[in-house]
Amino acid sequence: MSERGIEIHNGSVIFPEGSPPELHLGTEASPLTQGEAGQIVFSSVIDAGALGGDVAASYNGVNVSADMTGDITVLEANAVVETDVVLTGHLRGIHTHVQVLGTSGEVTGHTIGHEIGMYSQAGCQHSSGNIMGFFLNNYLLGTKGIGTYTLLRMEENGTMIVNEAIFIGVTDAEFFLTLRPGTCSSGGWDMATDVATSNVKAGILRVSTTVGDKAIQLYDIPAV
Image (tube, rainbow, N blue to C red; front, side):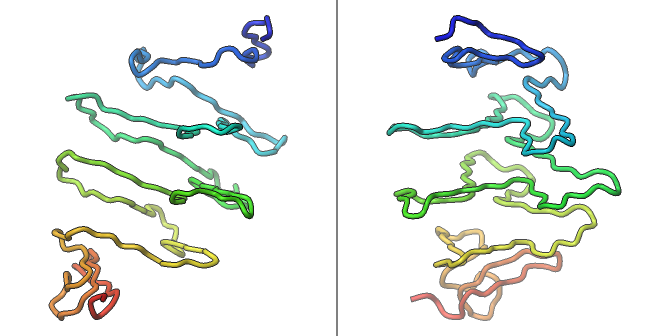
């Protein structure tokens, strides 16, 4: 290991190889104490100019270079409201802003809020488990207040006209949609009986609209 310690050169902080294995800015057991309103523990802002290139304010990576047992997580966010504490405001795990300002500015490529890119080489045994590009896995045991509980919510609050609410582009797919309801007590769907109208048809999904409840029918007879 190098005998040199931590070096600071023109605003850059260089850690010698092998040291330190961890950089602690507070822990679960001993978190940092808030010293001022609106405090930010870590901030990284780049003024990207004509130099161009692929600029990243923060880059995180994990390379698995040997057989191992465990879970790999590149970035983890944990927002917690402690026991019996009241938060007057929103609670967010990750909040991303993507903005294009001015009247003559332009983005010639795509404008993307979040992009998930998964890749495996041809012939690779990718995974013996399920493969999911996006996995929303909630576990709420508390009592819901007056608000609604939505698994996935999408809104356009400006003046832009949405061309596709959902776009799915795949080479092939075994199923378009998989529904796995339990015993439906709320009336949202049912695999064998009518849950939205009284016309004795099965396979109905109930849809809430501004002009009342409507129905999407998947099939007209119960599945065998």
